[in-house]
Length: 339
Image (cartoon, rainbow, N blue to C red):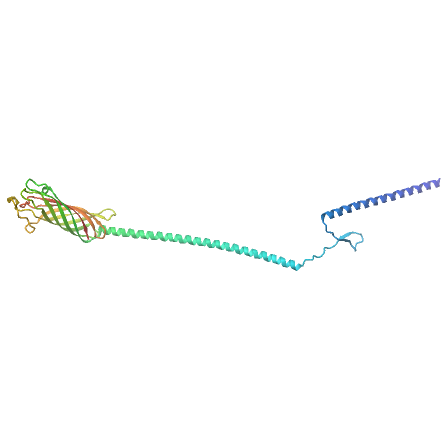
């Protein structure tokens, strides 16, 4: 009984050992297969990623069997060449930067110079315009002052003057429209020499004239032709100058006394069929009257200018023989120049 139990125990132990060994072998086989698969996968991945092999070796100082990476091989490129190339690159960059800065500075300076030149031209143009404006104002002021002075001189300047004029002389009243058998006189001509003095800074002046009038005779009698009448006159007048605006013209009025001699007519025609005695200047007497008139003076100098004038002259010849008029009236219209 006891022998049989012991035999059974021995058999069971042997079976257990046998099964344990089988399990260990299987586990080792599985682990080896897994490692082989992993190694193949790693090799495949490394082959796909890079063809460069990294040498590995076992660390001699380790006893655990781990694999350690080997240090990279020393590069074969010269470090001095690399440094020189870097310095050259940096120098090239610095030179390019300096050139760029210089170019920018030149452009900026050119821009500033252009702005400064434009500003100088603008200032010069403004100065030139201002000078022209000032000159124009000065010229305008000078012209205005000169014109004002000239106008004042033309208006109120004074001094002596002399002139000469001539024109038409027209008889008026009875001497023109004579009664029956008295003839009468028609239009004639006139010559006048004025001499005067205008007082400065006033509109007043004085003037004396010597004038010569020739009046055309009408037929007094059918038996003879009547001679023309000649009138010698002297006038003494006061003159008043009246300026007209800002023009060169001056209007003036004058009036005063007149003394005249009538000559040339026949003194014996009423008593003779063929009269032959004419009134002479020496035999005639001065007859008094008056004159009044006016005119325009167109000055082109201080006292020099043209003038046009007309006056009404009335004289009383006292019904002398051969000139049967108690009053002789005539109007000279003349154009002249004075100096």
